[in-house]
Length: 121
Image 1 (cartoon, rainbow, N blue to C red):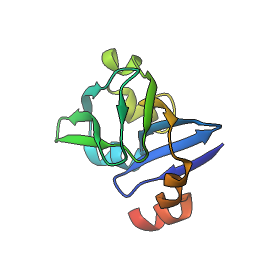
Image 2 (image 1 turned 90 degrees about the vertical axis):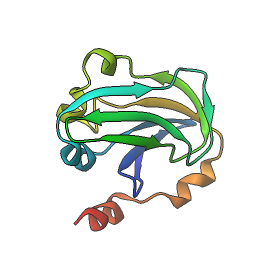
Image 3 (image 1 turned 45 degrees about the vertical axis):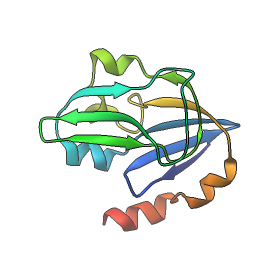
Image 4 (image 1 turned 135 degrees about the horizontal axis):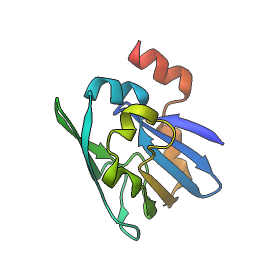
């Protein structure tokens, strides 16, 4: 499984034609205590760059932008009752979406782990 990152602080892992999307640990730390997460529903489709959700913390509200185009096959319903899970496991249990990707070439525009670490250093 390969993991990619965006300069908007999202991570994307790819397995076959299904991607898992979430916010990075760095983003969760910058947000502070997350109190609300608004996600779209399974079946919704979107294009790269579209706003696909909102994460609200005690400090701010931040839009989540689609790093790739596709169709949501699953939204993490656990975040409805446990938004703070993002603070505890941003790059693990607090994934936001499972997405059936529509264009694998869009991954060419994403950052690898080294490039993302350089970005946030």
